[in-house]
Image 1 (cartoon, one colour):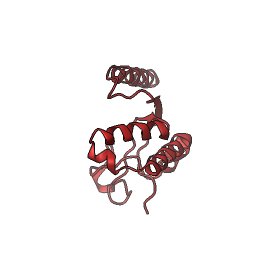
Image 2 (cartoon, helix red, strand yellow; image 1 turned 180 degrees about the vertical axis):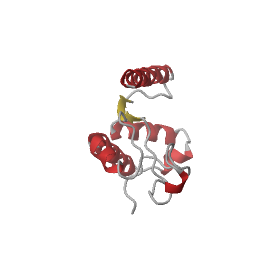
Image 3 (cartoon, one colour; image 1 turned 90 degrees about the vertical axis):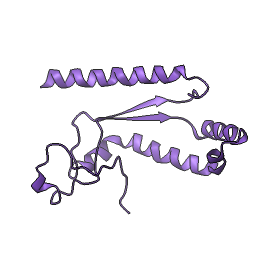
Image 4 (cartoon, one colour; image 1 turned 180 degrees about the horizontal axis):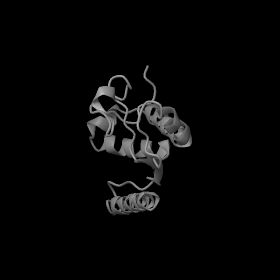
Length: 139
């Protein structure tokens, strides 16, 4: 198939002249400035899934433990190879020079501890603030 999709979009990227949209094959390739990976071990995800399934969550009842392991392994591969993945897209997409992957531990269940959402959001806001400051300093 098409390989890894970081993100998809039906609009052409900013800054590309309309005459070059099709010839440069930019459609469907979008790379964000910051990607967030909420990392959790598959056994933790399976315990959460099983609990939600037992509570009647019909979607959780459809998910298999092997699927959770496969998804985890795929995300780990992306996290480990992030810079290489980005460089592979540079010929086909506009890649922000400071594009980054932020890995946040998600061992805490945000459904049980909604305050952790604020902690995670604060961490992300601080990273974005530093990225913006760095861009201003380098401009």
